Length: 274
Image (cartoon, rainbow, N blue to C red; front, side):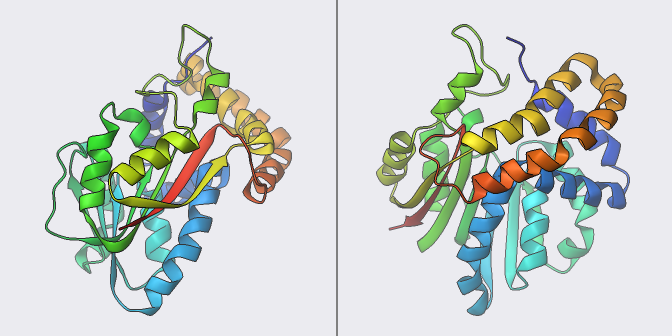
């Protein structure tokens, strides 16, 4: 089975949009449209953060901010939040610092180099998000412990990762995604790890279920495999491909958002610090 190498494709995309805020904004919109996990995470954040917003200033840590797409969503929808974004990729941090320069100047957000395995802070947060990060970290318990220590009592932790069901996209000798330290989590495993570290699971939900997985195959898997093989030369065939599949694939994403999935290739967990 061919592997998806996400990092080279992500680096290619980052290079294309790096020098244009307009292109980067369009890139964020594409990420939010195509990646089903963003649909789920934005839905949870809308519900979770509205009560915090009404109380005045509150603090959020984006633990593994990547391109910063969730930071854009959070700053746009919540006016009283102060965001701290951390990552281990300096080039991604530099790109985000350039794009969010006005918000940095106004004190609404900062971007800092931090490794979750060594992360310590005197500042405590009301919410921590960690989206598609833990599957890259071998010692995930240490990372989750450091996140838990950064939360106020009663604060919230929201994570998303591939689930153990994503093994269906790998054979016995290969891993479908090249950069992962593990295939993914089951509900039982992630809940047990959270509870060990003073985080009470409130909701654990499989994403990319019956419909969402099919949408992912059309919108992400096949195009990413094409990019992995052809690199920049994949752009022309994808220009023809996407208009043919975009509407049915987005309908599948929408179906996943409102379906109670008993299994799925992704998983999110929302937990509360006790």
